[in-house]
Image 1 (spheres, rainbow, N blue to C red):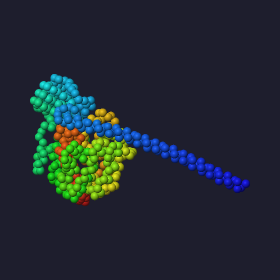
Image 2: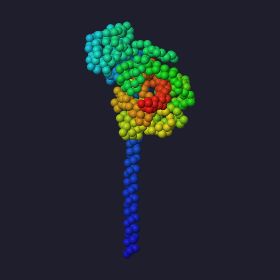
Image 3: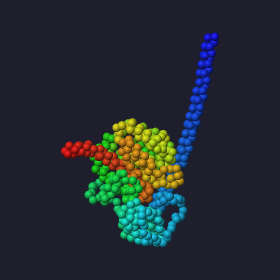
Image 4: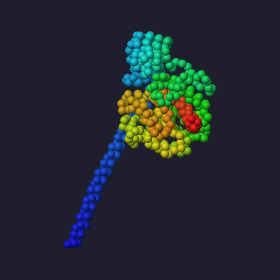
Length: 475
């Protein structure tokens, strides 16, 4: 009987083990199935996002062609940009014109703005009193095209208001206007320093790096800011005392780094900003790691976060410029947030990129450049409501760069080479996003000047510390 009981116990144990294994296998099968289904769902959603982004990128290419064509007629381009910024439908055909006679004696008060008012023929815009706080602070009068025999006269501008980007052609006149910007001659730096530069009064404005793009636009048009900053950049480069001759620089970027727009020219890469940067600084080597269409995040092609390790390990300086294509692609879901920093989101992948650079290149000076403001972002957003303003991407780049201790070259808020300015498009950014020869040259000079400035400030740090210590001791 005892032996029979033992056999029964063994049988029961074996049966229990078999049942447990069956339950375990069933549970694992359910888990594996769920995991596979989740992976398939994720792959399906990614494929849908990629297809959506491919369509958006195709549309961007069409928009670039539109801008290129419009750039041949600056007045038409300006009207086009005004419509985009005002949220009006953008379509070809006859312009909508209201108010064919004149606008006169109209007092303007508060922080309102007058913009996008086109007048043709013999109409006039005159005697519009704008006093003290009438249009001040954030107020502006901009983008008002005046053609034919029209005139703009007697418009007093006081306080912080500005009149900018007002196209005037034909026999029009501008007179009695308190401040009209963009009509003066520009003094390019010729290699000699002067004590009475026409740009000096604006140095305190554009040297305020924390000033937002919106605030800078109240002071100067992008064309004026571009020329003034470029003047200062050339002066700083001319005075450079830092020896870059043994330094290697890597530029990680997208089509802007790769010199898109110039591919049809033989040896076009010599005009890319990395190549120009090498000449300006006399650097030993500058690597161009720009790939057209690439994004920082993994929701589009050639993501920076997947290719930063291509940068040679002996690189002394790394410049990362991106975010433009991310703006053309990312919805709220792909953008993510800084609390979660999830995989395959802008916030998460950018965080991973910065962390990886910090760990892999601990002795390298790393700079992150925010994207240049471009009118195509607004144009595309008017058609695809899921897209986000460029400012959101810029804010995250700045926030994370500060967190990791990287220097920021804030192109977005600098107000330079902004394709919302028709004059900038006509002269430097012919398709609204990519530079021409002069555009890439200005960009290279700005990067060069910022690197020179960075090393100047680094050299001054020990001196400042010593001075503070001496003053403390003496006190």
